[in-house]
View 1: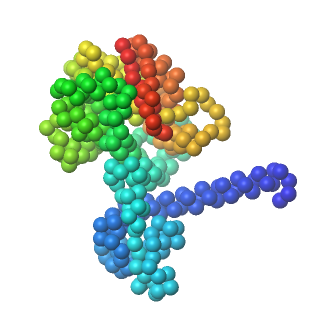
View 2 (view 1 turned 120 degrees about the vertical axis):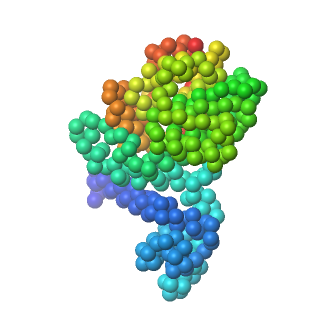
View 3 (view 1 turned 30 degrees about the horizontal axis):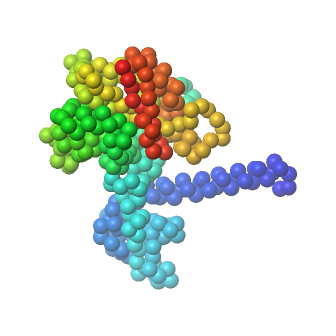
Length: 362
C-alpha cells in the first residue's frame, strides 16, 4: 500500500478497528453495570472467580471470562496472573469504581457512557426502519437503559453546579430563590435531578416537576423520597401547558429537553405562561457550534451521534414534529423563543463542555 489513497484507507481502517475495540469493551462494561459486578466489587472488595460469581449471582464460567477480559483491558486488577484461574484474586480500583458505579460524582460514567448504549442496541432494528421510512422511534423502544442513562447523565451537574451558576451569572434569580418561599416549575423534568438539586441548594423553595412520561415520573418520585424532599418537591405526569398552571412560578426550567420536543414553540410558550410577574425562564440545552463545520471536535461529534441514534428519531416519533434533534444551535433557540413570544434570549457564560444555559426574557 504505497499510494496516498492506500495510506488514507489504512489510517481510516485503523480508526475503525480502534472504534470496534472501544465498542466491544464498552458493551462488556455494560454487562458489568447491569449484572451488578462493579457494585459487588466496590462494596465487598476483591474476590476469586468463584467468590464473585456467587456474590453477584453470575454463572462461574461466564464470570471467569468477564473478569479476565476486564483484567486484560485494565479495568480490573489481578493479584497474580500466573496462578490457576480459580485462585486469581480480582479487584476493582477505587478510582475505577467511582467511574463505573451510579452516583452523583462528576466522574461517574455509568449513566452517561454505558447505559445508553444498551438502549440504542435494543432500538437498532427500529432505527433502521425509521431511517428507511421517515418515521420515528419512541423512547419506550429504547427501554429502561436509555431512561436511566439519560436521567443520570446530568445528575452531577444539577447536584454540584446549577446553584453556583445561578449565584454567579443570574444573581437576581439566586436571590429570589434564596430569600423567599419561591416556586419553581421543572418542565420536562425527567427523573427529577434538577428539581432535587435546586431544593437542596435553596431550602425554602417548592419545586413542581412536570413530565408526560409516567415511568420517569415514578423514578423522580423515588429519587425525591430517597433525598427526603417529598415535602417540598413533587412530580406529576401532566402537561405543563395546562391552563390551570399559568402564572404561578418564580422560576421555570426546561433542562436538556427542548431539542427532542416535537413542538418546541408551544412548549416554550407554555413556559412563558407559567411565570409569575418578575419570574424567569431558563433553558439548558446542547452546546454545539454556532454553525455547521466538518470535520468537527469531539463534542460536536458526540452531539451529532446522539442525535442520529436517539434524539432526532425520538422527536420524529411525535407528529406533527419540528424534527429538531440534538444539534440545536443558538440561532435556532433565539428563533424558537421569539416565536413563543419572548423578547430576547441571553446566554449565561457557564463553563460546561456539553451544555449552554439560556435565559429567556419578556
